[in-house]
Image (cartoon, rainbow, N blue to C red):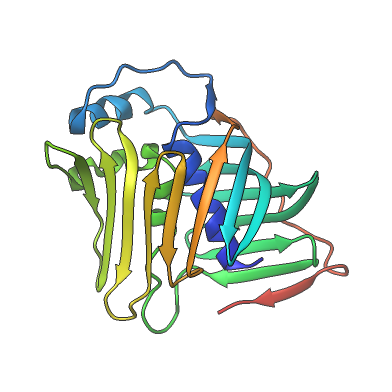
Length: 245
């Protein structure tokens, strides 16, 4: 339960918001048109959002021929932090945060605290950074980057966020205004994360986290602009601390 599982749970959050399986509260439905104009309208309807909370979404993770059933809560403050809690059979097994510079994971089962930089000090960077993860979570985070979006007028709206040696694409279905595919590929290291939404399933391929896995998720409640206390302190006498590089 380190950085790999953390990224997996962040993608669960992406699936939940993009597939619109959540019950939304505190916000009226906006009438949307298709294409990039529809995204403009959507962004205007949600321009007062500063944070959102996904509460108790049910997720089934499948990888390495194993199945994991968890309830996931995800809290996000724009350009600040992503916070995740995973509960299995009524017991919190993991609590984690991601910010611009680092990842911190509390493994409650084995009482281990992992810390890992999200940016590498030496060598090539990872194929994703904090902003990429944030963009995968919700359409809301892409609203400031509509100038980077290309509407093919047929099937997709494509966001391009290329950096040195890294190809970054997020594709939206221009009719449903939901994320359909994404691709982050590092040309020098050949590390990649790619995903495709098929109904309520987001299938992801990666040699950066895990070889291949699928996610099924449903339920949960999406609440906007609610304050959540983020508690990441533990008793240092009861936990082992591990630095990952």
